[in-house]
Image (cartoon, rainbow, N blue to C red; front, side, top):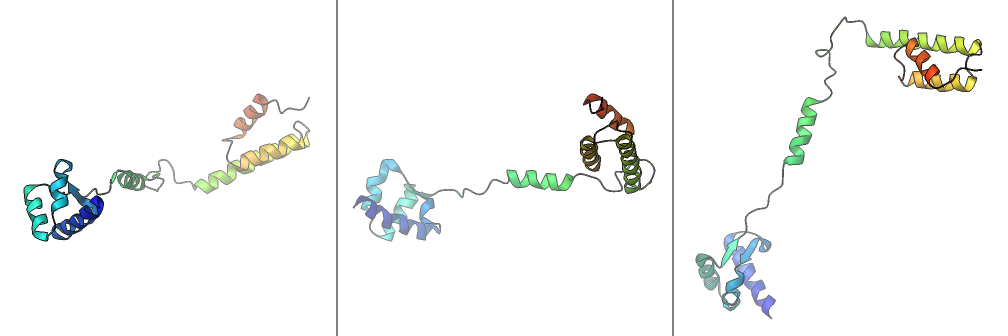
Length: 149
């Protein structure tokens, strides 16, 4: 019975204040007064006295959205305005480098310095951009003991 009575009070208060029923706050110390309220006038009086109030809107935190916006604004900054140095096409550089490395790997395989298995692995690594130069490939082969005995 208690909740049923408060339900109607809550509903009337929500209508009067123009908010949803979940935003209605009833003072726990003066709950009995709220239960006795029957008419809209009673509810209006309780609102005036401050027994019944509308809770503030919760709102949504914008923190995550703000962080995401900053990330999008900054990005990776790889545009032409960021580049320094001569305008030799990066793709051209890549092609030159990968051809040299692959030529070197073929040479090593032909001379039986590395195994075909090692060749295949190094080839895939080169394709993935693991090596900066032939010197880097040599260093890697030495460090990982890929030279045939």
